[in-house]
Image (cartoon, rainbow, N blue to C red; front, side, top):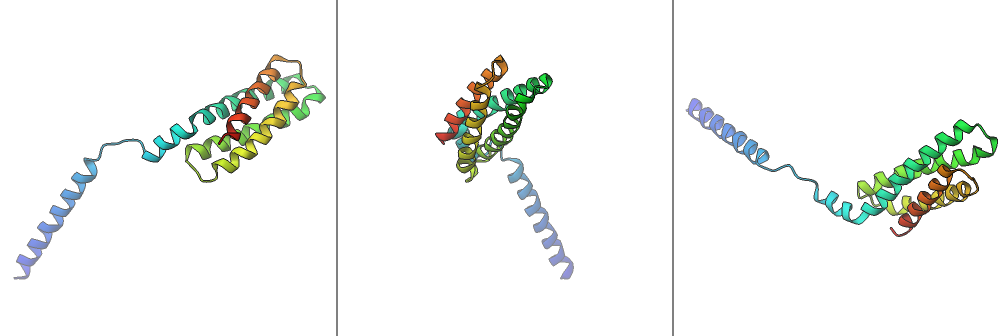
Length: 142
């Protein structure tokens, strides 16, 4: 009697394992539905932030090569802008409830960076200022 009970128990467990495995395996791999929602909601702002990051990194690099003391603030603000835009972009990508707050902070930092870069005559600083203004605008609209 014990052997029959154990046999039915074993068959039941094997059946459950096989069924569970099939149901998990049969689920197609798709993007998270929250990601699709986020993508539509934040896409333009994420792109603006990512463009700003690239411009600020380039500006920082070019200004550092110049070794001009008047570029110190520009370099520092570019670094801060990279951090703020990266954080905003990442939080938006996660559809975080803190994304809007980070975007507000990011907009302020982008404005400071743009104001400083506009004082400079170099093309990379002018481009950085333009991209910072665009990112600030998009972040404020969040």
